[in-house]
Amino acid sequence: MGKVLRESLNSRPAFPCSSSSSSPSPSTTTSTSVTETVNGSHHFKITGYSLLKGMGIGKYVASDTFVVGGYTWAIYFYPDGKSVEDNAAYVSLFIALASEGTDVRALFELTLLDQSGKERHKVHTHFGRTPDSGPYTLKYRGSMWGYKRFFKRTLLETSDYLKDDCLSVHCSVGVVRSYTEGPKIYSITPPPSNIGQHFGRLLESGKGTDVNFEVDGETFAAHKLVLAARSPVFRAQLIGPMRDQNTQCIKVEDMETPVFKALLHFIYWDSLPDMQELTGLSTKWASTLMAQHLLAAADRYCLERLRVLCEATLCDGVAINTVATTLALAEQHHCFQLKAVCLKFIALPENLRAVMQTDGFEYLKESCPAVLTELLEYVARVNEHSVIACRHGNEVILDGSDINGRRLFFSYFKDLVGREVTVELKNDLAIRGTLHSVDQYLNIKLENTRVVDQDKYPHMLSVRNCFIRGSVVRYVQLPPEGVDIELLHDATRREARGG
Image (cartoon, rainbow, N blue to C red; front, top):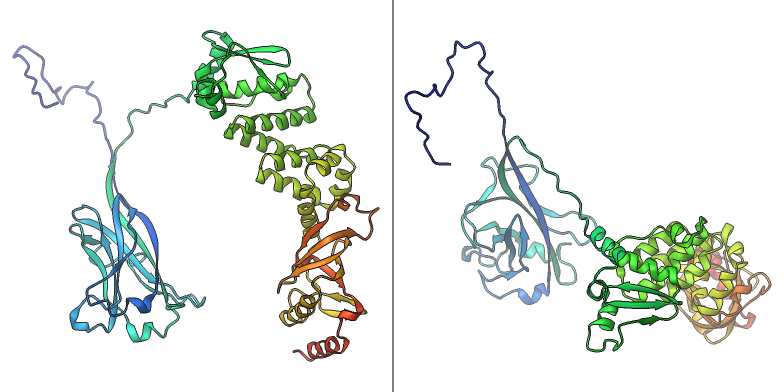
């Protein structure tokens, strides 16, 4: 580049003669100028508006800075206005360039949000209707765009924009950028990362190993630095200040050989092994069982990515005969997404009874009895629907949609705290217990609970305390002496008259 090449007089001409029949046709190239905006927004909440009044004309409170299009911005709010001539009659609102920049062109939008829910926002915007002169240009740091007379103070203070002494401002910025696109003459696609293959082959070769693990009588060789880089537990065990003194052969307890082999495979290859090939079994159940054990191993050695991969595998393979043990595993290892999937699956009417008959459910009851309370709530949600309010004997049907009805029964229930009641859910499950508490939504907490039909719901025998959502309740049977019949009749008559 920048050099001039001179040819000798005997050299051939630099340009062929136009009369030559073999001259190539002239080539055509193209390029495109692209101008667009890089958009971003910021929400600025201003609390204690009344305390800002009187701070002085030209004085402001500023939002935190935010970045759009490579530039830093801030919102300035002047409670007493920006201009002396307005005599503090207006509030001022501006968006300012807060970083170094020259001739920064941008579109702006300032919105004062209506907080009444009517969505009658006060909006000043360039977007969708760009000014005739084009985007606004900010010359240097500190340049602003906005309105000195954004809103008259007397009107603002009686409007829906001010709520609980608070204002809410939304700002959008669109920074203009231009660039030229030319033809792509060359295109080189880099290969995907194969670092996992390199480490995997290193494990398979057995070269350079410096630590051995004994698992159920079988020995595995590995590399300290690789294990330490992948797992904080291995790092502490192998190279930390509390490391094992004997690393010639570390014995791993409470883990089966195929599980440890799969663990090493992930650490080196960064992928799950073929579960069926590893177990020698072709059934889906065997793969699920391996994923369960591997999830426990991932939690033991703090391998977060492996744990999530196992969760995804178990989620895809959830089934009647394995879901209970998977739920217990999810509870023990704090896998909240997997736990929610299992609870929803078990709570389905077509699944519940079949799952209860599995050995895994017996294990779930013994190892994680607290989960049964959550399961009860999921079961109750399945048949959730609204009902009407009425009175029948000393059984009360609660209506979640009738505010007056809720208040009436709420007042009754408050007086019944500490007494025994029977709650029937919309899925026909009836629970008797001591009323511990109730809120205005008729959510009920019972203590010393027992199921009325114990043969039908044996899994509930170990539940002693439970929380019941008001929306899943069909009946609450009250002690006859706790019901004011005349007051209930009066409420029913008022409801029949429409309030």
